[in-house]
Length: 229
Ligand code: SAM
Image 1 (tube, rainbow, N blue to C red):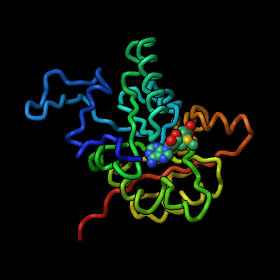
Image 2 (image 1 turned 60 degrees about the horizontal axis):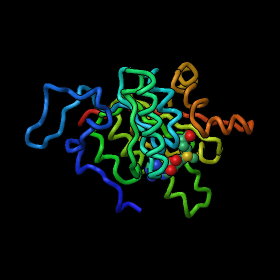
Image 3 (image 1 turned 90 degrees about the vertical axis):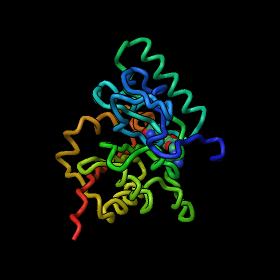
Image 4 (image 1 turned 135 degrees about the vertical axis):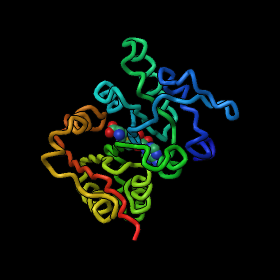
């Protein structure tokens, strides 16, 4: 349940220094809040990151950006944190830009990220919630898409992948219906190195490959807000 979940009151009160110690700005400390300022903001988010395969694959590819996995299961979050600490130890300077926190992304996303802070959101193999009465638990929905649109900057991308065709169709339908998003054309999808990582480096993606399953990918770009009349 959520009572044990810690989350900041607002993005300004979130202290990222323990998650990305290499990116703390030593010259800049807010004396009132004691929050250490960072040289960079989190820009790439993996929603329901599971065991962190994508984070670990993307960290060296997106080496100039801070990546964050959000995971609701405590033990899985701890596993990913330890995985990243170990990688940082073994590869000095290489995984400083990746971290994982425990969070329920269906509830607290705007507590973590300012408007237009993010450039990429990954939603990889989300739980399908097959039954119609469970569809409200899906991580792509009209309400949540508005939160993704809020956190993403214009030009930013939502990446989705699933092996469940009906869920793929659901995600496409809901993101298509949202005025802030437009689908990214196929050629561009196929030339994006993050798509390769999403297909092959997520734990679920590997499992689907072993079972010779299909993977359905769809990317959506955050459009510019229309000018005020
Ligand atoms: N993305 C990973 C992959 O592709 O290997 C894991 C996919 S797994 C099927 C779905 C993950 O989403 C689980 O680890 C689950 O705990 C997490 N999850 C489900 N609901 C969530 C929520 N509301 N907030 C954060 N994580 C959630």
